[in-house]
Image 1 (cartoon, one colour):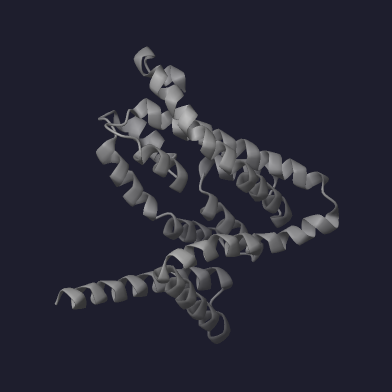
Image 2: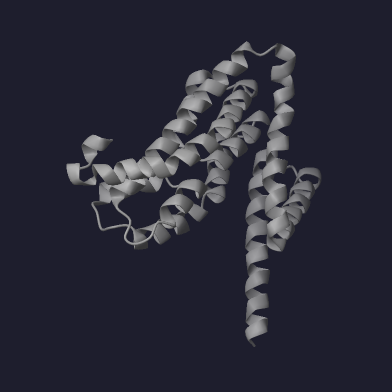
Length: 239
C-alpha cells in the first residue's frame, strides 16, 4: 500500500497505522468469533475469508450469517446488508469534507474501508486529513479483520462437535450484546427494535412471507415509521 503513496506521505501513512492499531486489537475477538460462527453456519474457509475481504462490515456479516442459517436467499441477504450499512453513505459524505482533495480511485478505496471505528478515528483528527493517514488507519484495521476471521474459522475446525453446535446460540447472544448497550443510550433504538420485533412476529405468523423477507420488511418499515414519527414530532415542537 505504501507504494501507492509518495515518499512525503509515508509518515502520514505510518501515523495512520499507529492510530488504527487500537482498532486492530479491538477487532481481534470480534473477527475471531465471526470466523468461529461462520464455520458452524456451514461456510467454507474460503467463503469466510472472502466475505471479510469483500464486505468488511461486522454487523452486516453477522446478520448475513443469521440469515444464511435460516436458509435465506442471496437477494434478501444483499438487501438486508444494504439497509444495515446505508449509514455509510453519510459517513463517506462527512469524511469527504475533511479529507484532502485527491483522485477518485483513492477515494473509492478508502470509502470501502469506512467502518464505525475507522470513521471515528479518522474524523476526530484535527485539520485537513491526509489521504495517506486514512489509508494507514484502514489498512491495519482491514488486515486485522480479515486475518482473524480466517484464524477463527481454523480454531473452529479443531473444536469438539458439541461446542461447534453450541456456537449457533452465541450468534444470537452477540446480537443481544450489540443491541442492549445501544438501547440504553437511545430511546429511539428501543422503539426501533421493539417495532421491528412486532412487525417481524406479525409477518411470520400471519403471512406466508419467508423468514428472510420478514426480517427485511420489518427492519425497513420500522426504520421508516420511526423516522416519520420523529420528523412529525420535531415539526410539532417548532410549530
